[in-house]
Amino acid sequence: MLQSLETPAVRTNRTDYYWIEELLTEEHRQIRDSVKTWVDEKLLPIIEDYAQRSECPTHLIPEMGELGIFGCFLPEEYGCSGVDYIAYGLIMQEIERGDSGIRSMASVQSSLVMFPIYAYGTEEQRQKYLPKLATGEWMGCFGLTEADFGSNPGGMRTHFTDAGDHVILNGSKMWISNSPFAQIAVVWAKNPEGRIQGLIVERGMEGFTTPEIHNKWSLRASATGELVFDNVKVPKANILPGITGLKGPLSCLDSARYGIAWGAVGSAIACYETALRYSLERIQFDKPIASFQLIQKKLAEMVTEITKAQLLNLRLGQLRNEGRATTAQISMAKRNNVEMALNIAREARQILGGMGIVGDYPIMRHMMNLESVITYEGTHDIHLLITGMDITGISAFR
Image (cartoon, rainbow, N blue to C red):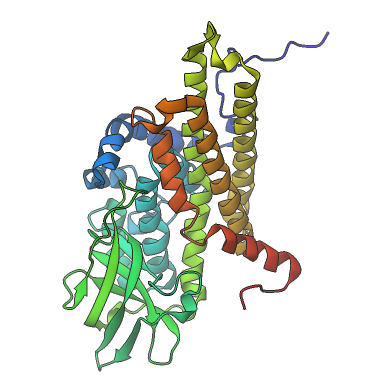
């Protein structure tokens, strides 16, 4: 006899449709649950207010450090957690379930600041910076994008010249998360040979300023600004010696995009769960709107797309743990999952009707945030062309 199909009322976890939970280790589940609890108890109660005021809740940074969020995939000898990339992904997913801006803050710290110092810095640089960055005592930012050079970072104008025991840095960077409050900036600039190289610039160096960007409709709980360098003297000891060329910053972006692929699923889950609850409670024509075919179609498509993205992330995490995940594979996941999350946010807003636009529900905040996420760390279309180049062997960039 065929077993009866499980109904939505019986299914206890409506966002783990393929029981991916069973494929996680006990450590994965414990790490995810600890961050989930923190998001539920500390972030969700305040995030709407901070987003409405366009203010970053920086008081949460020490707590994030205590949880081991920053640089969690780096070795314990530098004060980090030493977890694998699936755990890192789950952390990003839970934080972005709260807010993309807070995930951006953590992602920049981990993948764009701590990772390059660990991968391309000296041991002295690792010992000096990583432990303080891991606790959140120091926060960092990443300077690659310029006002005139986004998708084409190789055209950057920021550069430094040799001046004996130090270099002189000039130029500017744009759209820099964390810059208004960061203690350090990992900046990519052209060296005297015209090759792109990283430097660690510290707040307080003369000629280094970080003006904040205001009037954002998106990522309102994230602090965004510029980096301006006016004849900044940077000690040669602050240059990252381990790599030159675009491969350095692009490898950092691989790590960040990987985290975004997981984080976007968190945003999608938040919107889907909100829409599902609302549809079960909202009564029209004497019954919950969840009973109507069009609403069920929307919800069914949402959970299907979330499930596909979860499986994509899990396999990508396995490949990254093995050191086999390619840039193109990471681009595919980032592009797919952010588009998926944005579509779900829009459909969820439709289910809530007029209530979908107010701060009592998180959907419009997630939707606006995702409009930035779909652009940063490589635009939606650029990621499509990365896949196109990978499968054809032909670059469409030039």
